[in-house]
Image 1 (cartoon, one colour):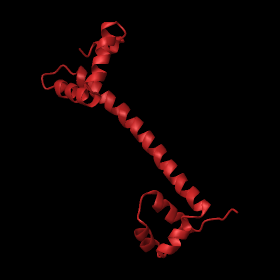
Image 2: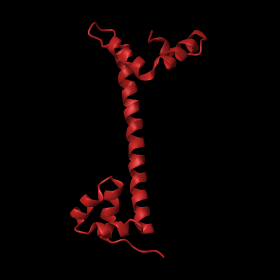
Image 3: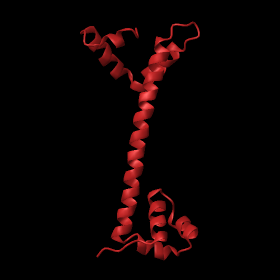
Image 4: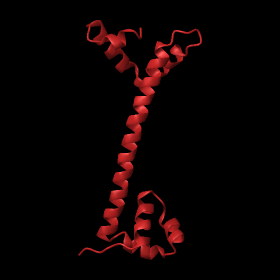
Length: 124
């Protein structure tokens, strides 16, 4: 049976999805913890929580992808900077730490086989 959630139930579902405690949600919305516990069993309440969590996950994937792209662009520009004040060594060392030696060695082995594109050859 489909049941439309009320405004407090929707707010509660969002707060649950955001990780707030039952006690905190109860106080914020002026409902008893027992009421909140009953709401958590309603299929539409569960669906609302899942919807909010899915939206949060999508937002995090989007932000992570953009952050990764921006970070790669920044690292690339730092590695290309030939000025005396360049932070090339620091950037390169941090990249090695982040990627791990296994991944760096795999790239080096691929490079010796001639499989590295021209853009990467200028790093060395």
